[in-house]
Image 1: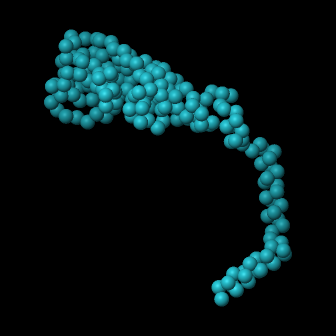
Image 2: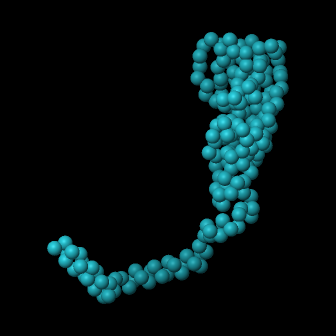
Image 3: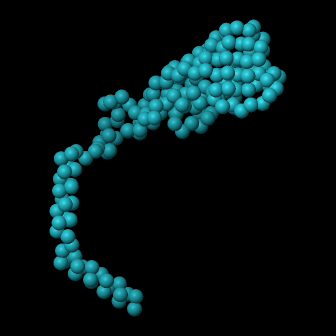
Length: 188
């Protein structure tokens, strides 16, 4: 993925201690990952990195907004993102699995690619329900999904109870008997 250079930190030439880096995340990250949840976005990423001999400790602050489909009206809506996270990058010949909290790098590598971590952090920051603020949904679409009022529901339930009490009428049995006779004659 070509985004790796954009969200990488070349740490080899840096002195031990605290360093700060800033990145801008735009639509191209979400397009590169072919995200189904996020259509685009504009976010600022600040990384405070403490470099030591054998590891990097990084504190992330990701803020901005992403464009998602509204769960209520299916139109695009802006979802604010405010994420704070911590990542440890171990520099070792030992190979470990990246688990979201710890990343492993070979001493031969001179830069750490943060693309995956940044993308995952944004996706995990999305709320479970993604909707417009109250009253901002597309009114035309909301009318299509109109919920039955309690009065309408009461009327429907009363009508169903009436049909239940009446049961199947004499005319219904005659229709069923005629249908049965027609099906039997077609079989012969």
